[in-house]
Every structure is written in structure tokens, then in C-alpha cells.
Amino acid sequence: MTLVRVKRVWRCPHALCPKSTWTETSEVIAPRACLTQRARAEICRRVGEDGASVAATARDFGVGWATAMAGVRQHGAPRVDDPARLEGVDAVGLDETAFQAASATRSTSFVTGIVDLTRHRVGPARLLDVIDDRSASALVSWVDQRDPAWRAAITTAALDPYRGYASALRAALPHAVRVLDAFHVTRLGFAAVDDVRRRIQREQTGHRGRRDDPLYRIRRLLRRAHTHHSQRSWQRLLAGLDAGDTTDEQLAHTWIAAQDLRLIFSCPDRARAAQALYRWLAYCADADIPELTRLARTLDSGRAELLAYFDTGGISNGPTEAVNLLIKKIKRVRHGFRNFDNYRLRLLLYCGVDWNTVRATPIRGRLPRLAA
Image (cartoon, rainbow, N blue to C red; front, side, top):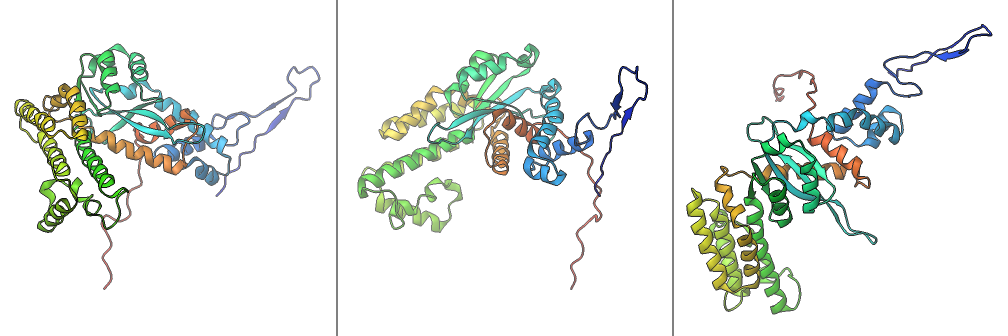
């Protein structure tokens, strides 16, 4: 069914009337508008809550992209800019994500996502805001614009090893505990394993890894935790190291360091973790492998943030990574963005706003019985 609204035009027959004609007005549809307020709100809900494309939603309503996007801005901006959306936050997570890919005229641009990691909150993590940069100055500027009471309530911040975030939080939220995320630290350890494997591969063969190269065939096994290996995978891993590793076993030493780095986060308390980290740094120094030395220097500079993981009950930036997946989903639906304001609005409407939409009651309370 298609509903067509027709507005009546009134005309006064008196010659002295100051306003000879006027159009009928209605609260549900604005002047010179082709959509009712209800239709605009539904377009905003579909684009925001359902993550639908603006172009596809506009086709369903029989309007153009600009008309549909105007409805999204009209009903979505008040939800996104509502100060109450940021209330009750005591822990935040920071991570970067790519906004626009590199081209012939520009380099890859990044944005910083700020996610609510408050543990007592019910439901999935929320995206608080998106900053059009990943620099420390941009993050400090965003925090300074918040209410002083909101800044004072933030007690914990989980971040990746990028030192710009740590320096920004030290300046903007000096009272907050900065935590180096365990996922990113472990990822750096296995990234060092990959770097050593590629370097040895180039030195020995003069080319990148190929299918029959022994180190290339075990590249996935090298990134697996030692507790997840079966007897067969252990045999494949050891055989590949014997065939392709250097005489001083640089790849094997790097793999052991990555596994030990992962086990630091299994320590029961901060004191034992500090001892394990000291032994790990000493091991990296004795190994004298360039990639391990660089990794040890990076983690040594963030030792306080790494050990703070045990002071906060193991806070994780995992929910921030989950929000990053939702961000990439919106980018795929939209096939990329050129306007940052539209990008920020779409992201916050999808994973930063509670819609509380009333859902239809399921017709069936259980799955139907399969016919024989």
C-alpha cells in the first residue's frame, strides 16, 4: 500500500485580504516535504539500528539518497549528540581503524575509536565517539571538550601499544590507570616471529616464502599457542625448524620468546608478572636478535601499562576490537566513505546508540518439528 498525502490550498475571495492564498499545514509532514516525520524516523532506524545502506533504504521509500540522508541527520543527530549517552562511563578503550585507504593523491587516513568498557553495564560495548585522527593532540582535544565530572569518573583506559595514546591519556586523564591490552601485546610477539621467519627466508633463498619452503609451510603453526598443538603439529613444527632455521636457531628462540610473553598474562598477581617480565626482557637481551631487541625495547617503555593489567582485574580491549569489526561492516555496506561527518554519524547510530525498538512476538516458540 502506498499512502499519498495531498495538501489543500486555500484562497480568500476578498480583495483586501493581506494573505490571499495559503497551504494546509500538518504536524506529521513538514512544508514542501515528500516524507512524513514517521517515514523519516523509520529511515533513520533502518540505517542506524539495522545497518542498512542509505541508497537501498531510499529505493524502498521511493526517494533519492539526499532525501533519505536528510532524514537520517534530522532524527539521528539528536541521538548521537545527546549528553546523556556518555553518562555512567568509568572505563574506556582506545584503538585505531582506517578511514580512507591510500590512493595516488593521499595516504591512508586513520581515526580513533573510543569505546565504553564499563563492566557493570549490561549489553554489548558501545562506541562513544570517533575522532578524525590518531594523534595525541586530537585525543587530548576531545577529552578536554568533555565535562570535568565525566573526566573525573574515568578510572581505567585500555589501549594498544601505540605510544601516542599513552602520552595523550597521561596529559588529559592523569588520574586514570592506563592498561596495555594483552591481545595487542601477544600479537606483537607473534608478529616478531613472522618478521624473523621472513628475514631468514630472504637470506637463505633470496625470495619470499613459497609453497615448498620449509619455513613457509609452518608459518601458521608458528602463530599457534603451544598448548593448542597436537602430536602431529608438533612433529611438523620441529621438522620445519630443523630444515629451515639458522644454525644459531634464531627463529626457535623468537618463537619461545613469543610463547613466554603470552604466558606473562597468566600469572596470578602483579609481583609474579613483574618477575616474569624481567626474565623475559633478559632473555631477549641475551638472544641478540634484532626483532626481539626492538620488541623488548617497545614493551620496556610501556612496562607500567603492561603490569597495570593485573591491578584492574584483567581489563581487556577485546570489546574495542569487536566494535572495530562492526565499523568495518558499515564500511563494507557503504562501500567506503568520503565525508567524515556522515561516517561518524553512521557508526554512532549503529554501535553507539540504544534504540529500544519493540520487536514483533515470534509466531513459533520453538523450531518446527522436521517431517519424516
